Every structure is written in C-alpha cells, then in structure tokens.
Image (tube, rainbow, N blue to C red):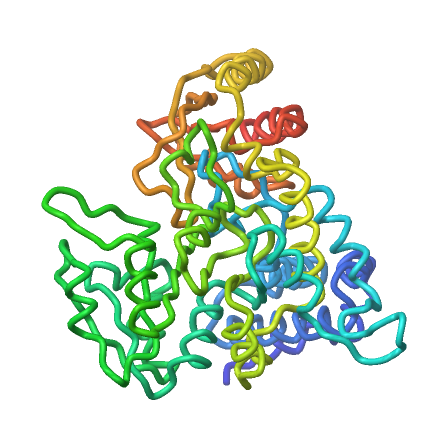
Length: 456
C-alpha cells in the first residue's frame, strides 16, 4: 500500500468524535444515536474504500455527518406520510384509496390505546372482535348477519375456504377477474381449496350454463362484479336474481363478490349505474362481499353480509383469525358504517363528498388558485376518475390548474418532494392539479407548496 494512501486513511476521524460533533446533534435528535452511529460507520467505510482507490481528499467531519443524515432520510423516505392528492382519481389505490372522515379519524385516535376490542364491559369477560361491527354492517345492509375481515380479497378467500373447501364453485368465464397487485380470481380459488368450475364463454354466459354444471359436489354459485373493466358488444350475463333463484331451486348458496361496495342506489351523479349491496340483498344473494375502502368510504376492510348460518361457518373457520381486523380498522369501519346509518348518502364521508362535489364550485376554486399562483397558472376544465376498481369508464367532470413550466417532470418531482408532497398529473407538457380530490380546506396550503416548489 502506498504510504500516502495509508496516511490519508489514518486521518479519518473516530466514530465517537463524529457523534460528539455539533453537526450530529440534530440528526441524533431526529433519528436516534444508534441509527446515526450505524450510518456514520457506513460513511467511514465508504471513505476508506475511496481513499484506498485514490479517489478524493479526506472528507471533513461535518461532511461525513451530513452524508449520514442524508442516508437516514433516504432510508426513511418510504415511511407512510401524508400527501395531497391532486390527481383527480378519488379512490387512488396507490394513495390509500378512500380518505377517512373526521369521525373515523377520531375513532382511530381513540382506539390507539387500550380498547374493548375483545372485552365485554358489562360482564368483565372476553368478547367478540367482530360482533358489534358485524351488527352495524347487517343493519346498514338489511341482512341477517355480517362479518368483517382485513380486505376484500381476504373476505372472498374466507368464504371459499369455509363453504367450499374440496368442493366445486361455479363461476362464469367472463367474471374471472384480475385486478391490481396481481390478484387473480383463479389463484384465490386455488388457495382456498375450492375447485373452480368455469361456465359460459368470455362474453356470453347463460343461466342454462350454470344449471348444467351443478352436481352433488357443487358448493357455491359465484357471481363477480367486473368492477375495473367493461365487456361490450355481443354479451350476455346472468343477473344476481336469476342466479339466486337457481341456487335456491338446487340447494346451492349464491355468493356475489360485489367488490366496490356502494350500499344504496344514488339517484344522480357518477354512481347511478353502479351495482349496490342493497340490490344484491333484495335479489336474493345468500352472501354479498364488498370492500370497506372503496365506495363505502372507510378503511381497508372486507365485509361479508347475508345469511347468518353461512356467516357462522365463516367466523368459525381457522382462517378467520388470520384475516381478522385490527382495532384501528374496526374503529374506522364502525364510524363509517354509523355515517351510512345516519344518511343514505353521507357527505361527511370524504370520498362520497368528492364524487358528488359541485363542478361550478370546483371551477371557482380553480380560478382563485390560478390567480394566487400568478403567471403560468391557468384554470382549466378537466376530467377525473372514480378509481379503486369502481365504475370503469365513468369520468368525473372537474376543474383544475395547469402550471406552465419548461420542465414539467422536474416540477412534478419537486412537488412530490415538498414538505407535504403534492401528487399531480403531467399532461401535454404541463403539470395539472385537479381540485376535485383536493379538500377545499387545503387550497391555501397547496398554493404555498406550489410556490415553494416553483422557487426550487
């Protein structure tokens, strides 16, 4: 080893000296002494390798501390953080789908400590985790019973495992869906232990197809809502009512995986064509499955409503414990269901308020924001989406603000790196802020964040 290289490496500071450096005080307060020490070890090792290879001078102490601090910030950038959704996609899966209502957030905060999750106050004994939330869901949906698990896929998995393990489940080929995150219905079916029996064709399935497939091994008739795509043209499918009638005739329960979870019909707005839990129950589905964080507007959850005897089998299955709700999900779900019990269309639920927001009011906000942002900001009519695998093909008339810039991708990156990240769209060489998905109370904050990102 050349003498000068060895000398350079010997001039690197000791770890203890770096931890005592004034520049290390803030990183230690932020990340903790142990994390900062580990990051500094990494920086010292990189510096030794660089000096061994003859690259660069010996770094100064404050430079090593700053590099360690930057490394820790990068490591922790993936932690859950609040963002402002200016994409115009209301149920944005990557951004957590439905934002919680004020009541649901308060319920989560109250449930953060000790709770009555599985405790009966009147008797002082262990209680049921799902009894109360199940009763609320059953009341909201008008069914004999209900239960809730940690997401919609888990709900379907539990139903199939509890009611059809080792037996046949009959489903239309046109409903073998795949949704985001590589969720495929045939894979869920296989994981449950049920045997899938496909009937009909991709575009046409008749009641006679189901009837011909029923055997002594048939455990369920399964109908699945194609919530994230449409099949158009020469098509035919069997209604829930017709399938349920066949099931009753043959003694085979009918399960409807509704997915998106709109409880009741909405007379106007973007959801008028969306199937509802209420309609599925009235049509005679024995069990209906839907998500909590889509059009219900609550937390991630999977709800199963319908016949009490079938739900009892689901709740008693060993898988029920593996897919159960935690206390925070339960708290938020109860508050959301209570909102639906108070009002047929509870606009206190943010997702529903966004979906039914008045376009003229959004336009006024866009014009105000553009004026506040000044040169290069233009109010524009635009279109958003429901998102979350709900209402495919339905667009939401909206207004937003375009930000003129020579580097739209760069501005979008700076907005994402803001103190509160703003997630926008890049369209036609502009950055677009769609205000349908920005709560009006955040308009002034968005202005400040955009101005700060422009300066950057």
